[in-house]
Length: 453
Ligand code: NAP
Ligand code: MG
Image (cartoon, rainbow, N blue to C red):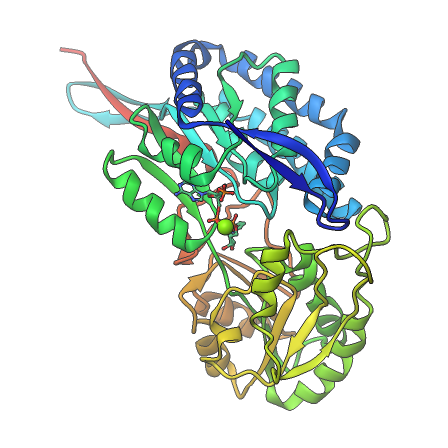
């Protein structure tokens, strides 16, 4: 057995050692989850709902502890970490309503009656990345448990602390052991077992497109159900008729939140050429005003990157001679800091245009008209999110329909709202999470015909 030392990215100091599970331990957890399936799905809907609400209450009464743990272990600013812990509570509460509403259909047929049931798909393997350890865990966990599935969750190796604590809080809430288990470990060991083990009937994976492709191939061997949430390279499209002041003031937060380690980051700003100069003049003070610093401070808007290796990766997209238009500042001393950075001009095809940098680096590119804006936005193998800034309703709708991406906002940068479906077009993913239909992704439709003859 080996262990992993979680490092505080803001101080580079060790936080805690976490034991990495072996393949055998992963198998044992999967067996426990499979053994718990019959009794969990047999829990009466109202009781399953009550247990999920109690789980949400446990999260709620430990919000501060969970947020502080994320700040220490992942470097997330205190305000963001508190929102993330609250998201776990809210997603559990939202899907607690589902067990009592899993109605099937009654379909008119000759010679009898025909009804459908939504049966739980079985053991779910939930593989979580390091960028949003708590919310992404909850998006899979809550609807899966509501559907009557049991869950084995593998947090990212670098950020396991909040998931481990959430696993303890599930037990404290009365969720039976074996129904929700957190198994920290390496992707190639624990994650791989979840993909390969025949008793895991569905994988929910959020992470890089590269690993997602391998997981999809692995799932094919068992025809295993699969939801993928992968990378992004989303566009923030600013038309000349928009409220340019607001568009410029908000653009930094659409890409530098979570230090740009956000699959929904609007990392390509497209600006109508006639207002480019005005937009850039307004963007510069907005970028310089982003408060980068100690994540424990309530004032801080952006913290450090997750690791030294990731910082080196981000920095590789800004080599000497890169067209840095302007950038923000970072604290001195230890920590994996990287300043908010604006690259312009950047042409379609440049590395900073095509690659998901996953750090606080944004490109600015002008466009001539609506058709070119849509074409540039779609010039990516990804299609996860995006924003459209315009005061013309017809244009907003035309462009929203024209951009091949799963989540768009108009005159706003909101993307992930647990009430609404979330997921990607093209290589940004497969399937949808959240919203009113998420439980369907954890059930199989069973059709039963009953003869009346
Ligand atoms: P990653 O390297 O793909 O890892 C994601 C998870 O998969 C981790 O838990 C990892 O474990 C595990 N893993 C690695 N190899 C595996 C294997 N062979 N079998 C099973 N599991 C394996 O991604 P990341 O670097 O953590 O996260 C960044 C990426 O996630 C970005 O591309 C980002 O866009 C994407 N993302 C997408 C969304 C979305 O909703 N679309 C949301 C957030 C992030 P280890 O930690 O041990 O490597
Ligand atoms: Mg990785």
